[in-house]
Length: 179
Image (tube, one colour):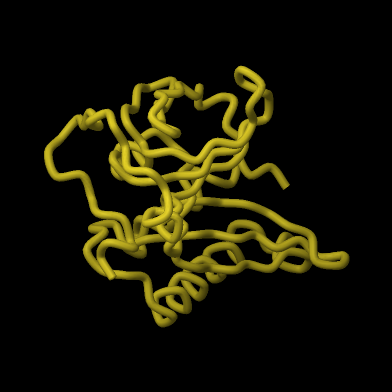
């Protein structure tokens, strides 16, 4: 299954349902493939509930039955919220959480390092800069294999020394600070 071809049509259908795609991934379970979607409300002002996930599942399944009828015979679909350790996939995800702790794993080593845990400091179109142990480290987006917020580690991680630079005032609070 080509996720890149499927992503845009799924994003369009989700927007009709009032949701935004945060992450799209596929996994194999036995002989079947499972399409996993993490979604959030378009307005981002309310948490995604189980009822929301059910509504998105029904809405997407009806659309998939029409657009890709044979696909559903071998592929399941799972819908969930981004969760507290929400994935960071595109630059606007990082921009939204400037000043918050994240974990990043890269495909290739950067200065001998593939795993980073730092505070999101700045975001450009091509990279994110995180502060790890007082050192600013620039990580190109095209090298990032996986990244997510790390709200459960915030209290045990040294606070940043460098003030984060945000494109807008009032960057959103991480899930751990909202709780």
